[in-house]
Length: 312
Image (tube, rainbow, N blue to C red; front, side, top):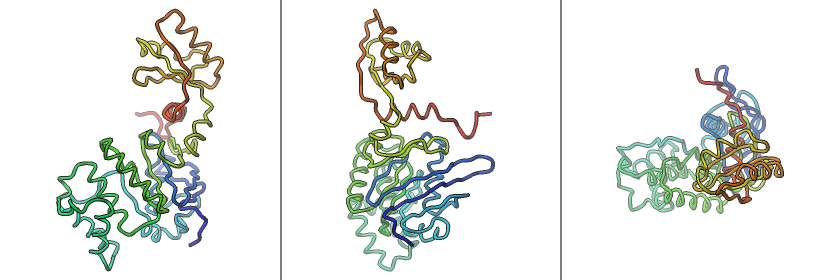
């Protein structure tokens, strides 16, 4: 075990399933106490990457460390020392919250199970519901139980695979406040998400599309790296305008956001000229806006190729 100053430090990870190259030369670093957002479309290798980093899958090639442990040589030690929250809720509906946590504590062979479970229930705000059957919990409370379970053994690294999918906005907000409290204690978090508001709450981001890492850095760095200019057009019949703009000079993408159409491109002058000509004489208004994360991620996703190929 070595201490590099990083909770995760991996280089050139590859994973194949049969003829499919699911993760391609993945390299990333997560600092201690950092919340690192892992984004990308479904089927892009996020879950496979997380499972390699927590010792559940062996990479075909590449090197790296988690918490100072070597990925391949020390896979068992990694599994004992990280907290992994799976994409699918995986606890027992016919047990109470306390019974689920006690079962997990037994798996970790904790000698002071009751004390650990009591402390975890209190820390995650679950004490008053400790005797409630898990199957009767809402999505937000199940999420909190899952986080409590992967925090029982006090890991310094959490790997969370789409932990807030299907959870209401209030529960998502509470969950993220808890993640920031954990990060303030020096705990590192790698979290995959599809929500842009969550991505903006991360210290750093990585975007993976069909196995290949396309961008990483702070939100500002990821946005700047695509060098997109964006205009917002407001008025009526925006869907028709969006279709009409496809393929015109300077137009890289069009996306409707509520009552506005965002149009982005890499050549700012050409884009502005095209848009002014397109809306001339129409009851529409155009305003230059800051390019957002969602604009950038849609742009990158549309330019990535599916490593599974077209459907049969």
